[in-house]
Image 1 (cartoon, rainbow, N blue to C red):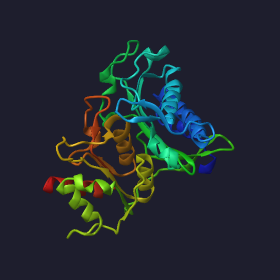
Image 2 (image 1 turned 120 degrees about the vertical axis):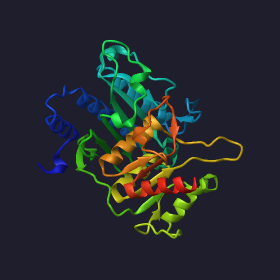
Image 3 (image 1 turned 90 degrees about the vertical axis):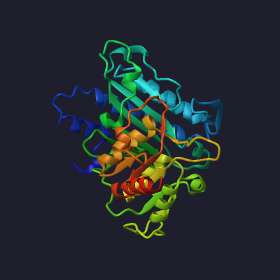
Image 4 (image 1 turned 180 degrees about the horizontal axis):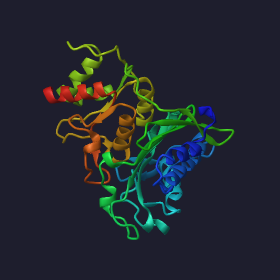
Length: 339
């Protein structure tokens, strides 16, 4: 069957056949996320007409102003994921603590972590935003309420991860550990159709993506690494890289996944303040790292593999470098040598 005629449901079921022991629960969770993505995509397309653009007037646990669509997307994902009892715990960037008990969740076998609307501050200016998710198998026995131990797991034990990008088209990209596949929403049918099978990061990178306005707060190693990417160090990069930065992790990651490159948000050393990381380990960095590795890439905090880090809190933040393996490993090398 031509790939453009394969729906995400058909593809998930086909992958499930390769695992005779599968119960279909993980498949159901991915269905739930796909349905939630369709609802969120619909609201984003008509956000201005429905008067749900702009700030909600509240502050989330991160100390950030919540956008109206942040709250809407979070509610949709929680509702879609909790009613069927497939997950035992839900953690979100927008919630101070995980949800452990809602309806039939006590018997859920998985844990779902998500950033409901990454880059939401860009919505008012019509820039691509996205949803990021990671799925873990719970560690505790089912039949009991899940615990923080079920939530605080390293990315290397993810069973699935993905993202949805809401842009000129809506795409859902996910991996269950057997490659990365992308599906584009066909609005007339209301279906995600397979458009990008077996995605691999191109060996020849094209872009580096970072907020150059923060360069004055970077370490010496990160500044010299950036000069390397620009071809200004004695060591020349493998290709002439162009700078592309949107400021929405999903958008920057998606472009580099398809075109090759590196995205990074390093520690910021602001005067008189402790070094500050930006991105959340559980709901942003770990899922994206999982996808990158499945597509032939790599992700690091500048010193170690992101997937090896055991989170200590739900909202733990980390420096983040992700993309072509050679470029991320070169970042580690510069930080090791120069700090």
